[in-house]
Image 1 (cartoon, rainbow, N blue to C red):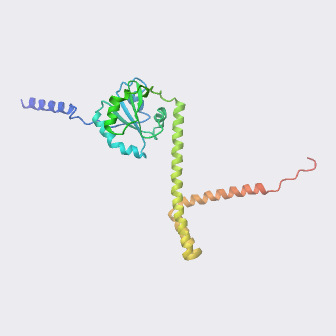
Image 2 (image 1 turned 120 degrees about the horizontal axis):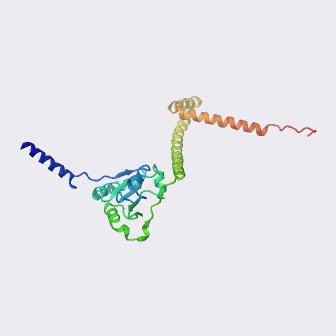
Image 3 (image 1 turned 90 degrees about the horizontal axis):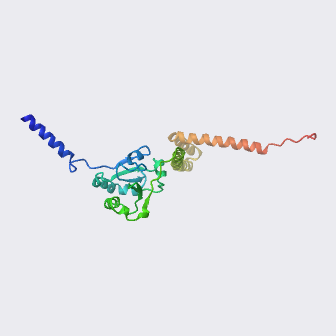
Amino acid sequence: HARSMRLIARIALLALVCLPGFANAAEVVTLTDATFEHHTQAATGQTSGVWLVRFKSETCGHCAKMDPEWTRLAEEMDNAVIVADIDGPNNPITTDRFNVRAFPTVLLFRDRKVFKYGGERTADAFAEFATATYADDPNRARDVPPELTPIQRIFSETTKSLALLIIDSYDAADRWMATARKDFAGVATGFRKGGVSGAWERSVAAFERSPRMWGGTMIALGVIGVSFAMALALITAPAKRKSKEE
């Protein structure tokens, strides 16, 4: 009899856990280029449910500001509408596929169409759009674009890599200039206080603090100097006189 009661209690507890009120609240789903179509089935019938997807960026202030509302939306929708995020800059294939050019961009996938959101960035406004008002304007509905071809995928990845290289190069140059300004100011101060020896001491100290930066700079200046000298030698070298026979 005791075993039967324990079994009944376990079954009752399991049933309570499975009830919506006791289940874990739905969370924001993270999508990537690799998982987007598999999860959303955007171009193949959308049989996995209604998806509200936010294209975001880690450096986007507006995206960070709406994070609490987006999380609350996921909890309130409880997968009646699946709320998801995709990092746009790091997933260029999907971003290019849907022609996303600004962050945040919110797209609704339902009724085998895609709808772009353009209202207030609150959980209530998102919920109303995803469940009702999306259909108010028939011109808002767009056909879901097909997946990118292999050539288009390569182009998207290459564009992303080039953009990141430019950003990294700019950041590196900005850091180099900040260090250079500080070191040059130190050398100038050393010269004013101690003449050539003071400037030399500050120069050596700067090199010891940033050997890779100043070492690389010296190598680059050396290469530029040699190239300039060779070009100057070619330009100023006397031309061979043509022989009379020619």
